[in-house]
Image 1: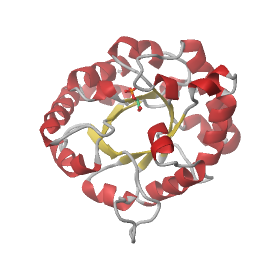
Image 2 (image 1 turned 45 degrees about the horizontal axis):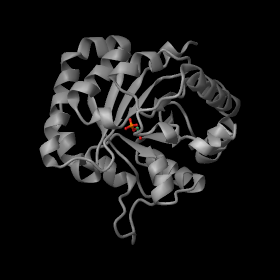
Image 3 (image 1 turned 90 degrees about the horizontal axis):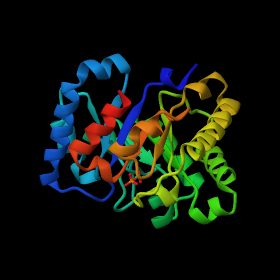
Image 4 (image 1 turned 135 degrees about the vertical axis):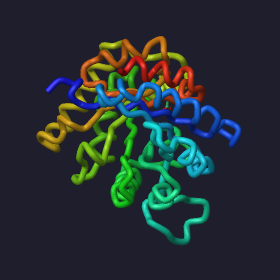
Length: 257
Ligand code: PGA
């Protein structure tokens, strides 16, 4: 099976950006995707925007009858309870999200999320019927020390549980030093990491591990999307800055079609 047989996913990560006025960009992205409906269907490419909690309901309204999906950026492991300020996977689904980013390096850093916490959140996402996008990635010192594959492999092993399948989980490799910096790894570096992650997935999940998609994330933009998407075992992208504007988001989707 070649990576083309895995359907590409282009997911935007708005992070802590977006007021209601910015829903216009969601609407524009959604309309742009509707205009591409035939090519999206033919290629099997799907696209999503993971917006702040406060915008999920309104964004879900704005994308109705279009091919765009809406996601969240985190969830609590429990379905409900005394956890002030937290949001559960069930709440995300209820608001209209169909996926959720888990274990982003900014959450690992800002909220000290461990692999064990991310694994618990992954089970929550599955319980609520959300597609989980589980993020892994090394820091620059880790890469300089020659430990990138080892660090990322460990994150993947410990962040996933045994109930992962291709319909409930996507992996995103995001080198921390490439996020928001304009720097990207070489095609060879991406291929090495995605190949290592693919081998781990196959080892653990057998044939299913061949089907689980592995996205690349970190300074992906219209100018480099085609190059990155052409790398073996790259099954889409997780896009930060370039997903905030419909024009650049749609240009990246076009590179995946
Ligand atoms: P970036 O962010 O595209 O702005 O580098 C990617 C991410 O953090 O998901």
